[in-house]
Image (tube, rainbow over all chains, first blue to last red; front, top):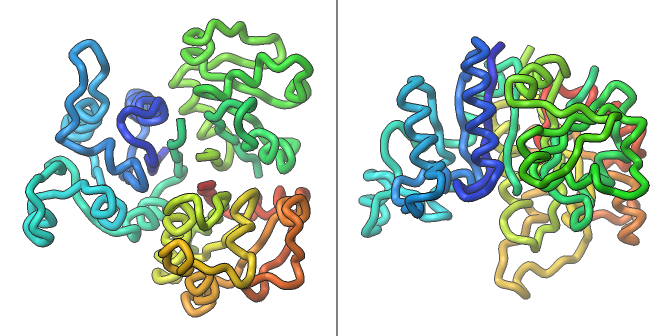
Length: 130
Length: 92
Length: 120
């Protein structure tokens, strides 16, 4: 089964963790994740500048590791990311901003990537809210 | 066609569950996760005649016992449900 | 056959950028000629109220974008009749043309008809 997983909440939201646990279970069950698409506040779940207290879960780090280790296609919506100050090298340079907080394995791209994922997946699963 | 409706807001402070129940089809099911599992605490539940799943970890975290008419599930079962139903509608 | 997608938009146009970002998914899908439907439900029906003054709160007017949906090939527009009725909104004078009010039963059928659903 091919899954497209869309996340709409920041790393500190329980739904971000839930999405990650679902994604792990999907791969463990032998399924394929055609793309992870982070939209709205989900762009914060991809931020590389989150500092979590040591005794708490670092979800953004866990997401990044999960995507890298499984060589997944992790796409962050560029319009949603710019609006929320989640910038990679290119965008920070383009808009002359002092900080970069989006790095590999994440890629910035447009909403077309969400539609493309929906077209190639058997199921779209969205996570967001609390 | 069947839909698995996924909710994560508390029904005591949010209207998503009400809206969802209004359009819930006969073959559809509810999956309660996060604060939505508090729906199982409601005194006169409107859910008893529905197909209801609840995420086990969220029940445990909140010290809620799963009633007989609902089914507690883990993540592998969540994945299976998302395949078993034709589509998943998360009320974000 | 491309897969069809139903967006259920539940937020008022003034509750932040939620309504706009839901609409952006619809517009992007329309731009790719994908079969997209848009259902306004709960506070989402407030997006359909005519004569709203976005400038009063220094916002952009979402209504203009909604009215342009047909230019993007998005013509399947629906509103939850119950949501309209409890908010005292008449389906007759909506800001957007050709929005079809639906009963709960109709909405059930509508969701069945689409391949995937996103509720925002």
